Each structure stands twice: as structure tokens, then as C-alpha cells.
Length: 274
Image (cartoon, rainbow, N blue to C red; front, side, top):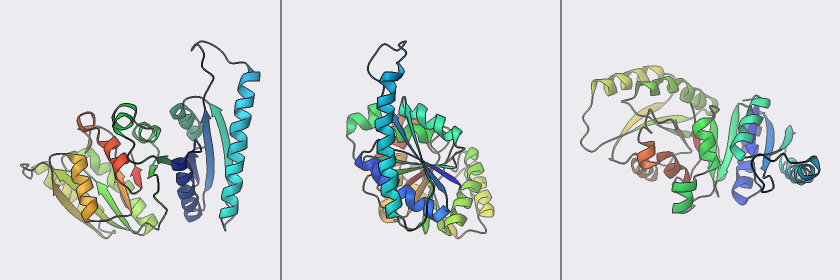
């Protein structure tokens, strides 16, 4: 990991994620790129904003980023390389643009916990949108979650979806990087029976993870998000890895809104991979 992108709107949740990203940067000896997407003045969509309107907004955003950068440098014992980017536009579009510009390896974003039914199910979160649509590993850090060494990783995996097995190498890589133990968690319906596909996937995963200390756990629950939350309550972990595409464990994404539910209610770091 050479470059870590950290979007921030300077909210408490975003600042918490920045602190988490700083610890990851020290761990990986990586560069941090702080980015703020500032809003344009309200106007018709076809209006081009003159420079004398945009520049003051960009200047304020840039000053706030520099202040945050200096704060981080004071907190860090190591000499961390930190760059700042202030861009006008919607958060997702700016994050996508800056991640390509800097050839980013990892994204770290904050999220407000227990955000409420309207925000959770109707508005959602920029962090969730980024995790779903930008194919760069993305850490989602709930507000209040502090960095701690990652010794135990849980990977939510759908054994019925063979597309999941291609992710095992990514999960394995993170386990080796953090020198962590792994639990592969599969949520199955209360009346589901073991299928040939599930058995074959399980054997494949076991073979792929021979070099990593691991085990496969089956949780019986009809609702995927609740099954994972119940598992995490009984088996604490340092990091939950998910794949937020709809053709895997989250094939019920638009029924249950699983990614949003987990991101808003699971109080530990979530790593979205593709």
C-alpha cells in the first residue's frame, strides 16, 4: 500500500476516520492524500461558475485541509507524506477523480453510527456509495471507532456464489499483511440445506487458505445483515471484510439494504473489496 486517500468534510466522523487512516499510513509507510469536496453555490445545472466565485470556496477548503494536515503531522511520531486536494463537486465524483489522479491503493472514510431511518434507508452515505462502486479497497470507519492492531479478521462470504472465491486471494493478502487470523462467515437460511456448490466452494477456500490460520463458520439466519451482526456480537473481531456487489452474499442488497445496515450498525471497521 503506497497511497491512502482520505475524504473529509471536517465532521467528527470524518476526523475520526482521518486519525484511523494516519495509523494505517504509519503501518504501511504510505502517503496520505486528504481530499475535500466542497459544494457549489446553488444555481441552475447549466450555469458555469466564474473563478471569482469558485476560488474563495477552494481557498477556504484548502486552508482547512492544510490545518488538518499540520494537526496530523504534530500527532505523528513518523514523518508521514501528506498531500491535500480541494475540489468542487459531489463527494463521490471528486473521490473517484482524485483516486485515479493519485493511483490510490486504499480509501478510508468515516460514517456516522445510528444515523436514523431516513438517512440510512433513503439517503445512504457517500462511504457506502464509494465502497459499492469504486473498485479500490475501502475502509468504512464508524464514528467513535479507534484504530487498534488487526489480529482477527472476519470475511462475510456466500458459499453459493462461486464469484466469491476469486476474492479469497484478496482476503488472504490482507491476512498476511496484518498477520491476522481469519474466520470465513457464511449466513444461510434456517431451512437451507448444504448444496454441491456450497460444498465445492468450501473445499476450494480451505485449499486456498492453507497458509493462513482460519476456520469457516456457518450462521443460520434468514436475514443476512442480522446473521452477521449476531455473529459479531458473540465472536468479536477487529475487521469485517465484505464484497458489496449484489451478485454474492449481498444478492439481497435491494431487499435488505445489507451494506447500509452493516455500515451504520456494526461498530467496527469494515473493509469493502472487489
